[in-house]
Structures are given as structure tokens and as C-alpha cells.
Length: 236
Image 1 (cartoon, helix red, strand yellow):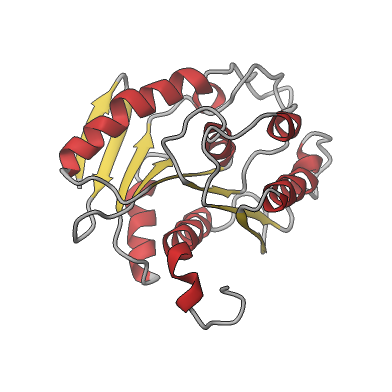
Image 2 (cartoon, rainbow, N blue to C red):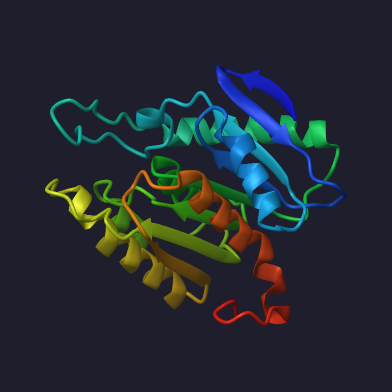
């Protein structure tokens, strides 16, 4: 693993074995990138490079616009996603690819919670990524569904992956209650555009097996090209 910092962000780069490999950018918490990479290897994923970005200001870097706090003890969201995406595409990714010394066969973006929201939002602001995975994405976020329905992708993605815990919408918080309905509608919208879109419901609430859920999303993205050759039930 090679690590570097840009403007306070920590980037941990894990190199796969081979050349012209996919590169996945994962916005995550410190230390989770290595855990997720190891889990994908345990799951038998194809070789790929992973750039895990941490030391994020989650309520700013991952959200597209300002929003009130979810509760009385939470902080308000201050939209900084566009500024962070500029940093990611103009500085973090070029430095990562320089370290790898390998032109990726494709680039993907992934994240959990607000990171999952950002992964999908980024597709409407840049054409640098051709695949995305959103695990327990925060699609309760105000007006995000309406934004997705009314804006074109900068580059129509090859495929999209969504997952959500079965208990995530079972809450008294009126905004959080919308997360399953919104995620299902966004996935259906993308599918109707002709994008191969996977939506999976998984056991538990928002905080269950985040590493394993994230690794499963990365695995799905990495295996998408091989789907026609896979024979397991439900894989095609």
C-alpha cells in the first residue's frame, strides 16, 4: 500500500497484480479501505487497483447542497461535493494513476452512506467514472431524487449497484423513512434508461457489516463484464 495526502485528505492506494486494471475510487473512513480490499480478495474478485480516500468532512465533502440537520444533535450539511469532486478528479486521481503507472481499463466510484450518495451524484458532474456502487446510500437527502430525475448523466454509466439494509427505513425520523422508497425509485429510473442496474436488500440496519456490504458492491462492479460467462443463478 502507498499512501499520500492532498489538502488534508488521506489516500491509500492498493495495487492489483497486472496492468491495465480497473481503478476504483472509494470514499470511506480511515483504515476501512484496507479491510475492504482484503475482503474483496477473500471473495475472489478480479484484480483491480483501489484508491481509498479518507479524512473526509462527511457533512460537507459528500453532500451536493446545504441541508438541515437530521436531528437536534446532528450538524447541518454544508454542500461541498462539487469542490471535493474537483479535488478528486484534478488532483487525487492523477496522483494515484501516476503512482500506479498504469492506465486503468475503466474507473469506478463507490461509497457507503453519504459516500454512496456522492458516488451516484458524481456521475452527473463528471465523466471520469463509468461504473458506480452505492451501499446504504443516503438517498433520504433532500431533493436528491428530484435532481437525478431531472438532470442528464455527464457520461451514462455502464452499470450501477445499489444496496440497502432491510431495517434502514424502519425509523421514526421522517426523512430517513424515505430511504428505501427513494433508492428503489432511483434504481428503477436508471434501469429504465437502459443502464444495467442491480438493487439488493440485505439483512440489518444501516450499521451492519459495512465492510462486507461494500466489498460485495465492488465485486459486482468488477464482475460486470464477465456476466455473460457466469452461470450462477441470478448473476446474469
